[in-house]
Amino acid sequence: MTRNVFVIGLGLIGGSVAMALQKAPHTKVFGYDAHEQTRQLADTLQVVHEVVKNPAEFAKEADVIIFGTPVNITLDFMDQLKSWELKRNVIITDTGSTKAKIMEKALELRQMGITFIGGHPMAGSHKSGITAAKPYLLENAYYMLTPHEGEELEKLAALDDLLKFTLGKMVVVDAKVHDHMTAVVSHFPHIIAASLVHQLNSEKKTYPMTSSLAAGGFRDITRIASSNPALWRDITMQNKQELVDQLDNWLTEMQRVRNLLAEGDAKAIENYFSEARDVRDSLPVANGALYMPYDLYVDIPDYPGVISEVTGLLAENNISITNIRIVETRVDVFGILVISFQTNEDRERAAQCIEHKAKFDTYIS
Ligand SMILES: NC(=O)c1ccc[n+]([C@@H]2O[C@H](COP(=O)([O-])OP(=O)(O)OC[C@H]3O[C@@H](n4cnc5c(N)ncnc54)[C@H](O)[C@@H]3O)[C@@H](O)[C@H]2O)c1
Ligand SMILES: O=C(O)C(=O)C[C@]1(C(=O)O)C=C[C@H](O)C=C1
Image 1 (tube, rainbow, N blue to C red):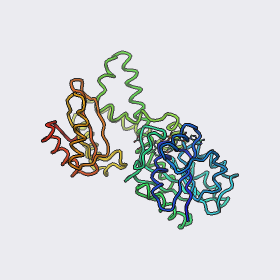
Image 2: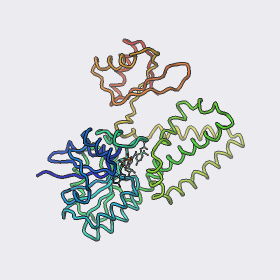
Image 3: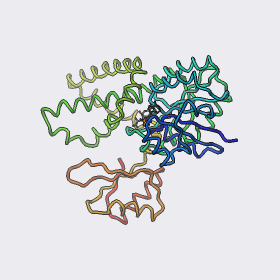
Image 4: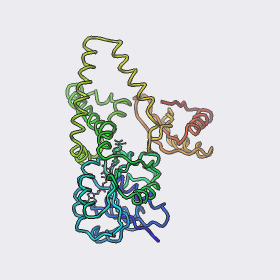
């Protein structure tokens, strides 16, 4: 029997989930988005098997409903759902970055006999929209599920069974614990990234050249400041208490660092950096196919066709790449080509091949 999966919100995450789930057996993926253009693209780019125009009308055919909408929109839909006609055994889930408020709302659905199991894949991008969606976006990333205590194990297993086709690593987490942990590693860093950009912006009024000097370090740490502001408004508003707590801890820590600097305590400052480096270097391997850690930096000269020369060499030697980009970090060179690989072995073979055959310098960060 065919299982009907209905994805509502076909942007970066909803679109990626929809594409990945098309690989699940006996599954037909339907999709709806509020934006007409996104619905058209979903059809053209085959993000779903079929586009739907009226979500309330189609919901009665769905075995699984997945919200890929911004977290406040998901809350609105959860209210609307109460008056939708649904299959008796439907399983509803979401992909939102916050879980406590959503699971609180899900209690209202539970009282009506509707199963809602919260979900959150821990991978993404600062880019939004259907054109940024990729079928392998969630590969290797933790995919958290936040069922209510006492949720039917069969339904949890059925959802887990479906979502594993995203190739995410499925784990069950309590919703409040989820919001605490994601505040630390995701939501709070977005505030810090934005604050650094604000600081640069006010500096550049006096020293206009500062922005041109923003090289690898500044760009790396502020990439996520390019994320969708409305999306992050809703996430931070839903998780505001955890974020206020994180900010208080940060202010205390910054005050301590400030004192060490003002006192000129060089040893303590060195320890501050070295402890951070040790913790950072021992973090588990980054997740998500777009952020595989096996990056190779290639110093390329500036002539037409140089990139296809490098990729052609890799293809000839059967070395697959997962990502390729150019970073412009220095003013005296055209740029540095950064190529990502699935494994360290692929990266080593690529480095040898590029160094010997193309004679370009390669290095690992
Ligand atoms: N961006 C990330 O890195 C990331 C990672 C993991 C989870 N998430 C979560 O995934 C969800 C989607 O985020 P995204 O990054 O894919 O955003 P996005 O902006 O790329 O996609 C959201 C989509 O929802 C659609 N939408 C908005 N209102 C709608 C409505 N009323 N009805 C139907 N569709 C509507 C938009 O048109 C858009 O296509 C959010 O809850 C977010 O917290 C985001
Ligand atoms: O890589 C990015 O750009 C992201 O912001 C992805 C990111 C994160 O903070 O790590 C953003 C929101 C999530 O809910 C999960 C992942």
